[in-house]
Length: 139
Image: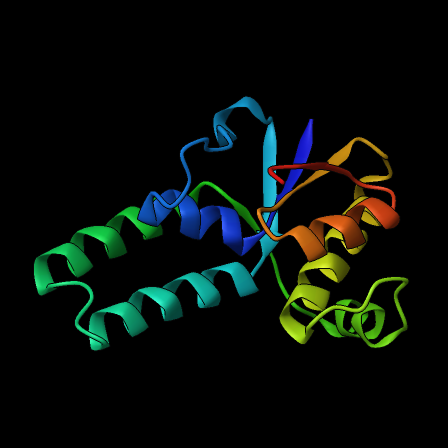
């Protein structure tokens, strides 16, 4: 099985924001946009700057995040993904969510299977992924 992971799930796992976590180890291959790495590290940095994390916690969480991301196949954002993101989709999405969905669409085209699941805690993004033919987990 192949899964596309949205940043909302990685951040929730990192900050323990949900009681029921999606267990990522059940998927054979996990993919995400390279955007996931930037989004997650930016949230971590912002919380540190806002003094919501002390230095020790920040360093520990940064290492945890790096380790978690190392187990994910990151899809580089290229012209083909941006082109998909620039076309009208049946559901209105913010720019970064559109790039995540476009990355998943591109992945599905490349692996040539419909057995790609989209994992997100973002309800609007999950609905958009369903409309685009993905099995959605997490919401």
